Length: 294
Image (cartoon, rainbow, N blue to C red; front, side):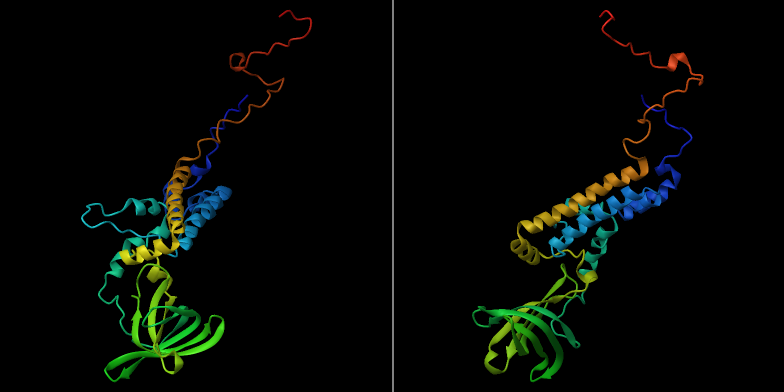
């Protein structure tokens, strides 16, 4: 028999300020529950929903969270991003990164100061683009005055197919924009001097997190990432969508409470000396034995 709920007892989602709990739940999954003192459920939402979202970002190499409406459409927010938006603060950078990437100074043709960064890529034959080995090391570049104007020169120090190598760099040079989708920045430069003359290195250096997260990719970059990652990129998107939609349910749970949890307990057995209303008691259950006629 169910126990009558204690009408005087406040429910956890009513104990604190509901508006504050709502704002916290919208910003960070589970934070509203923690504010209400619902610790276990709060941490489940925090690590479960937020962890799923960030896992998707990692699987997609950062080219996952963005808002990129098609030209000609009146809709300013895509369904792709609308699902991610429910995850809270982690999705908000996409709202302003589109404006940052469109700035006129978001270009880099030459290095304007000394650059030193970890580099991963390949050594290629300049004429045929045939791969001559894999590179992993440190690249140092700086601007210098050349015969025809400013030039970018430097060195690569690291390993070529596991063997130590040092390459002198210069000549034709390309470096991706400082603000673009993803956490790696494409770099290509020629190799000069010695037997390596006539070759080039192509690869990437790290991009600062806030210059790559939430930035909409251009079509060429999107095709490159989806072609290289394949189903992994699609899975990354699905993870972020699920996390955003799950947090909407978590927000509802934070404000309105769960579907179960109050009023479904078991009634206590009344004490013999306790006065009870006979009309509210359940009828006695007859005991059937061998001598009782059926």
